[in-house]
Amino acid sequence: MRHPLKHGALGAALLLAAGCRPAPPAQQQTALTQVAASTIANVGLETPESVLYDGVDDVYLVSNINGQPLDKDGNGFISRIAPDGRVLQLKWIDGTSPNVTLNAPKGMGLKGDTLFVADIDAVRLFNRTTGAPLGARPIRGATFLNDLAVGPDGTVYVTDSGLKAGPQGFLPTGTDAVYQLDAAGRAVPVARDTALAHPNGVLAEPGKLTVVAFGSNAVYELDLASGKRTDLPRPATGSLDGIVRLPGGALLVSSWEGQCVYRSTADGYTVVADSVESPADIGYDTSRHLLLIPIFDKNRIEIRPVE
Image 1 (cartoon, helix red, strand yellow):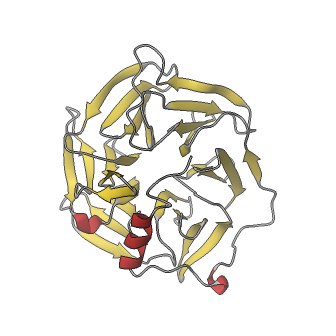
Image 2 (image 1 turned 180 degrees about the horizontal axis):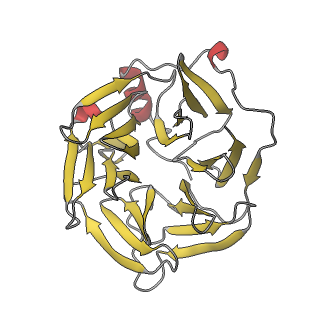
Image 3 (image 1 turned 180 degrees about the vertical axis):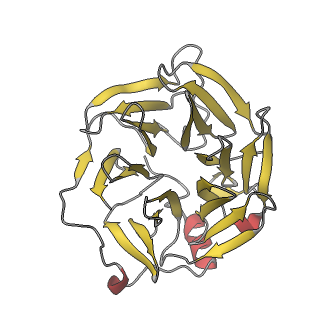
């Protein structure tokens, strides 16, 4: 399935407006060690958007949009896949099942025994063991809930990329924001401004959030107390999607424009995975030191070793 924004005219316009250009070949040097990669393909995935490693059950959770990113079609699903590539349950959580609402699931996060899933304009909750639905947290005014993260204190954060479907792709809605869910499950903005440039991937750490923008190649921190933004070094290409932190402190960031995954360094960024068309919301297997890349348009998961 092709994402109408991520390959459309609007996406290109946003990147050009931000001054973002593809990296020259000299900048596309790989930092990947010479260890065999693997692929999970032809197993029934449908528009995989996010991969989350559940270290308790040692399993990969994959959110499948199964259609267009903003269609409330009730057919999204979440898969459980073993690290060796075996599909344990293709439709572990199935939007077509009775009593389950799941339209176009994207970012996910785990808090205790609860799985939180971003789904267009609501965060949906499921039991992390059984997949049973546990309710939802609608976010009034949100148009494109995208990535989700759980902080060290258990606070849940979610990005609104501020987009809607248009006749020739996606159009801005002006709702760009990063929210936190308070103790009552209400959405409270950490920051809300179109200058966030369609916030996508989010990483929650003590006192701050690190965010990557889909509308540019921007990487920035948001202070949790004040919402103040601090810009970080940018990778060479934009249309950024997922973000994870490696144990050593480096960031991994996926770029649709660069068709790659970057790793931050003291001098900027290197490429740890290249030639990955439509790399969406990446995950990281902390037990095996593996980068998990959902290939949105090709219905597969690329697995690359990275230290």
